[in-house]
Image (cartoon, rainbow, N blue to C red; front, side, top):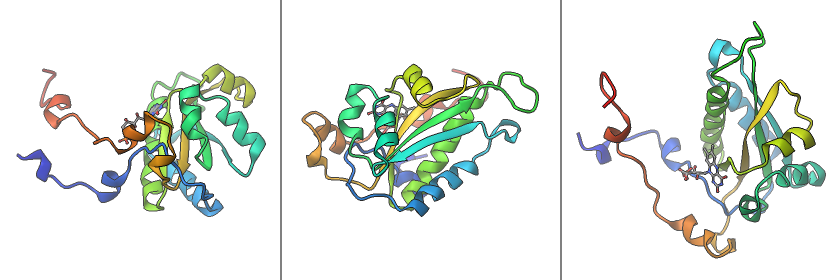
Length: 190
Ligand SMILES: Cc1cc2nc3c(=O)[nH]c(=O)nc-3n(C[C@H](O)[C@H](O)[C@H](O)COP(=O)(O)O)c2cc1C
């Protein structure tokens, strides 16, 4: 099998995580389409443990609250994104109050589904672990039964030349992936 010859869905191929965003605002309907796509992800016991806190650039207070949670490295580029989202997980199953071991898995699935929908809409998402989770919990009023998972910058594609030195090169660098044999094992681990 020649891996390079295997074709996959073009939305999956086209999805990537840019750092340069255009200042074009996202149409409200498209924002709702992103969240609707997320809602159709699979989840353990169909608990849908994901929650999303979001703000657009034209909602300066909410936007600043989200931006302020990011580490400096991410702030320098994510500030160009017209939409910031924080994904949040419900720690326990609501149906029996036990720990939901797959909550983060399910929030990740919702984010991945959203990213595919974003690509379909001409939008791009950049997910981030680099943020202060405790600060987000406090400043965004997230209840104790929930925990922040990832920040997400969303927008239309921008000009890589708008990025500071260092990030500009990363934006246009070739992307790489492990080959299938490095992460798939037939029958048992090896
Ligand atoms: C959970 C998660 C956390 C990430 N954290 C950051 C981050 O803090 N800062 C950043 O610049 N990129 C971050 N990324 C983006 C990854 O570096 C990127 O997805 C990876 O290099 C693969 O590139 P691609 O998404 O363009 O295929 C994160 C991605 C994920 C899924």
